[in-house]
Image 1 (cartoon, rainbow, N blue to C red):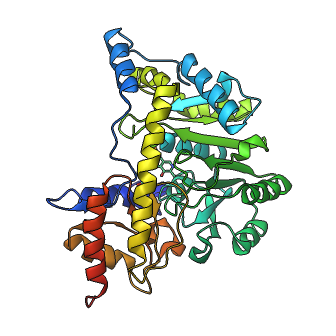
Image 2 (tube, helix red, strand yellow):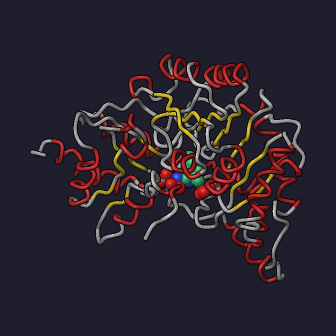
Length: 380
Ligand code: PMP
Ligand code: GLU
């Protein structure tokens, strides 16, 4: 059967593929980007109450006004993003859906999107589905995958309609310093480019601070969601905010003509996320993740991998050498440790693997690294 040509260059999601492979008996799963914490109880209770109260129908397509208002307050207070009203926000079924809708609204044939290399496995496919072209901005493991002169010169030499940035980053864990984001904004401003800032790992920072480009530049679509911060990956809830109402209106058309709205009781549950009690749960999670990150970095010293300590997210992305990372991941899986090969994250991911420490405790990490170390000295 002949399928739509838009799929010609689009491959499956490596994160979901390897996560499915990791489901076998006794496998230590370091694949998918999620934590093993439960959703805070107040959020669960609020969602259950909404179901009991019969809040089971369509909501406004852009989301319930109370939730959009809470999001605006958060973005103003924590991210210093101003010029927003609840009408500048759209809530949808996950940050991924929001990236998809935003790209669909802005990008078409002949448009170029600049994407860091390596970066999350879905940016490039989403741009391709929108018929856009991609310009890769190289990141260097020796610089901890933080943009350096090569990244900036690639950006200077391109003419992107949209620049995607993601700090803290997937798969690198890199947290971009404020001055790096200012430099990206400066170039975007000169080139009249839009920035899509994916801030989904915002609360998972162990050194340094988060800086939102939306606080200093108007042409920014800020993306965030509830999946990571509140351990709600299965609830499917994310949002965008943009001070430009025209952009929001166009994205709103795609939302109305596709997903309609985010799940009603999920939105009511999410309202409870903006409370002090829930913030304490998030902080506890951050501390635990930091311990895991530190443990992983200790074990990394016993390998020959190159891995500068990442300051955020819950991934490490070591360069493991001039070997086929796909083959390496398959062989490691046979030894019951599942990771994601680096290549699907971009050409600069070749020879790397992504280890997610979000979903396992230190005991499992210890066992996994025992296997990885042993494997390093075997004939591969
Ligand atoms: N952006 C990045 C960088 C991600 O790693 C992910 C994966 N969770 C998403 C967006 C999508 O998150 P979700 O759709 O679960 O909100
Ligand atoms: N973003 C997470 C990851 O990278 C979840 C899966 C996905 O959306 O790609 O593993």
